Structures are given as structure tokens and as C-alpha cells.
Amino acid sequence: MQKNDLIEVQCEALGTNGEGIAHSGGLTVFVPYLLPGEKASIRILKVKGGVAYGKAEEIPVPAEDRVRPKCPVFYRCGGCRLQHMRYRSQLRFKTDLVRGAFRKIAGIDAEVDPCERSDREYGYRNKLQLPVGVAGGSNAIGFYAERTHRIVKTDECPIHPAWSKPLIAALYRFMEKCGLDGYDEKTGKGQVRHIVVREIKNRFLVTLVTTEEIKGIDYLYYLLDGIFPEYSFFLSIDTSHDNVVLKDPPKLLKGKPFYEGVEGDIVFEAGASTFLQVNEGVRGKLYERAVSLFSEKDVVVDCYAGGGLLTAMLAKKCKRAYGIEVVPEASACADSLKKKNGLKNMFDLCGTVEEKLAEVLGKEKGAALLFDPPRAGIDRKVLKEVLAYAPEKIVYISCDPATLARDVGILTGRLEETEQGELVKRETGNSYKIALVKPFDMFPQTRHVETLVLLTRTEESLHFSQMGCKK
Image (cartoon, rainbow, N blue to C red; front, side):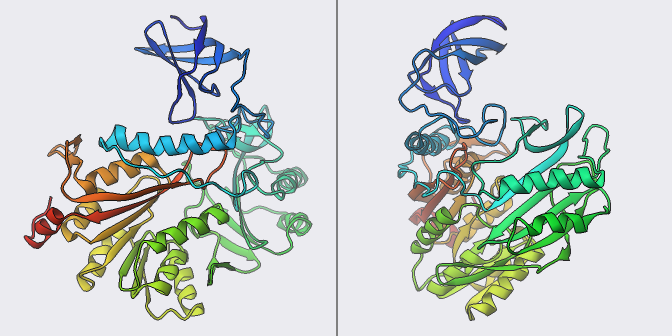
């Protein structure tokens, strides 16, 4: 098999990115957008070792689960990967994705509950983040093509609310009127890099990321006045050459620094840099289930606490709740939330989990732990500290099945770190057992999934802790 060969294959399964998997000529062939059971004529694009990559040229008989994507740039944009798949199949895929990650990465045959559906399959995201650059010699606003920083221009995005379309049009108009160019990563030229918008109960936090102070902002206000009923505007000046969208807290130029929202009976607030889950409906289901895993007698430490919403929900139910958050703005939101809701048993610590967790555990000997880390997962040093402390229960919320499986493998003892820092599989564990694995579809139409895990302590783990031994 060689590049540009045209071959016939039948899709047997889906890969971790939602691509079809087939076999031909002794090779495993990966074909984007091909569904199980479909026979297709594909063009080979690349052959490396025992793996080939192809592109479907013709699918004579589409699978029953194939649907027409709503987005006109779906096959070129790297944001969504599953719009061609019926929603019920997306849920099955994500359940299997989590199960497969545990098996392949940690050697654990975990019992995984069916993925919790989102009530909204489209228009669910409360946050829009768009790169602004150049394409074909003109300004381009859109999303990156998969595994590139090439912007695919788009006028709207179906997984975002209706306001995304007039917002994109307004930014194009503003840039044209004021003679502004999109940022070119190759040359470092251009003034506008990103636009980020967060919606909180029909109020909006708008952040424009530029390379310099720009003129004509009042005209942009005029355009935004016609789109949003109430909004705040922030400017973030970034002259670096990396890809981090928001580094330092942006400067408030118009409106309020924070807006209030409500989740259950908790009043919270968030600013431009505060982390919030992007799907409010699924967030409510996820947080409700997470809180249900703790009792009224528990003291809980919420690590990577963001703006403190989940910490507050835990404080409402439990004996005490501590939140650890490194972003000062988010930690300030948590402090305000505590006061607004009269939660005297809620305590906020601003700093890294690596710095602050030991401090809390030194005071609260029997505390339970909740982790909701970034995509990279939990630092190894923190995991070792947790194993030495041996809490009775650990709740882990993750947006990445791979790092989740790795960390759970370490906590259960199914993955062991060598002196060289490598992780090797063990046949049995001796630290924690998995009591629950429940995926939630926080991100319909994409390959991403949020997962809730409950770990409970084994007697052997407690024995090691009491002996003062670290694994």
C-alpha cells in the first residue's frame, strides 16, 4: 500500500478522535468521518509502519447513524468531530472512549455508566473563543483546522448560541472600519489576535486580545450595543509569540468586572478569566451528582476550585468545604460568593494545589478530596501526597479520559512509577477501588467528554497510611 492508492475498506470501529478504523493489506487504516459498518472507497494519504491514513472518496451506503452536519465548515474545522454522527451514537462512543482509556492506559476493566446526555445538542456553549488572523491575504475569524494554526473562516458556529453570528460580523466590520489586521503568527504583524466572550444569564464578558493599544474602540462598543443587552468590555495586550490566549488579567474598559449567575440555590459571580463549565445544563447535572457523593458529616477539599461554585454547593451540604484556586480573579469570586451566600463553613485559599493542599490536610485529618484539574491532570507530587494521606474517598472530575485513566491508575495502584519516572502496569492495585465512573456529555458534537469518578479507600491503603509509609 502506498500514498495515493485508491482502496476499498469497511469500517470496523471508531478511534479516540472519532475517526473510522479499518484494516487492509495487514495495515490498520484510520479514516476520518467514516462510521462503523460503512464500506468506502478511500484515498491513502500516508503510510507509516503498520498504519495508514486515508480520506473517504465515496461511501455508497451510509450507516443508519450518519446524519447531515449543521455546520458548513464541519469537514474543515477542527472544533467538532462528530456532527456527522447521530446523537445517540455520540453518547455510546463517549462511554466506550472512557472505558477504553481505562483499559489501555491503566489496565483497568472499569464498569462505566452510560454517558449522561445534554439536553441541548447545539447552541449549548456559554463561551466563545475565536482566533483572529489572516487567510488568503485577508482578515480571518474562525477556528483552527485540526492539528494546525490555520484559521478556517466561519460566519457562525452551531454549537454556540445565535449571538455568535452577529458578533463575528461586527468584529469584521470593526477591523475594516478602523484599518486593523488579524495577527500573523509567521511574521508577528497584525493587531488583533483573539476575541473571547462569556455569557452569564444573558449578560456578557467580552475580551479583545491585541498586540497593542488600538484606536476606534468606541465604534466597537456601538456595534456590540446592538448585539448584547448588557456587557462588559476588556482589553488584553499580548506581544508574546506563544499561543496562550489570556495570560494576565485583562483591563476592564467598560461595564462591570463580574456578573452574577445562579446554580441551584447558590448565587455566584464570574469575571473574564474565571473558569466555568461551558454547558450550563450538563454542569448542573454533573455538580449535583458530585455533591451527592459526599455526606453531611464530610469535610471536603475542592482542588482546582475555579470561582468556587462547586465549593459552595459542598459547603451548603457538608460540615466544611475548602477551595484551592491559583487564579486570583477566580479566588476573589469565590470569596464574594461565600459572602453572598452566607457560607461561614466555606474557606478559600489562593495558590497552587501543590502549595496549599498539605496546609489544609494538616488541619483536617479526615477530609475527603475533590479534584477538577485542567486537561493535563494532577501533578505526580500531589498524587503521592494524596496516597500518603489516604483519604476515605476521592472524587475526580476530568475533561480528558487519558489523563484521568493515568491518575486513577496511580491512585488505585494499577500504575506504578519506576525510578526513571515511567509508569508501568501492575496486575492488581492496593490503594483505592473504583466505585463509580460516570461520563457526562459536556461537549456535544465534539470528541470531548467530562467524567466523574468516585474512588474509595481500601483497608491496605489505610494500613500504609497509618504506618507512615509512602507508596
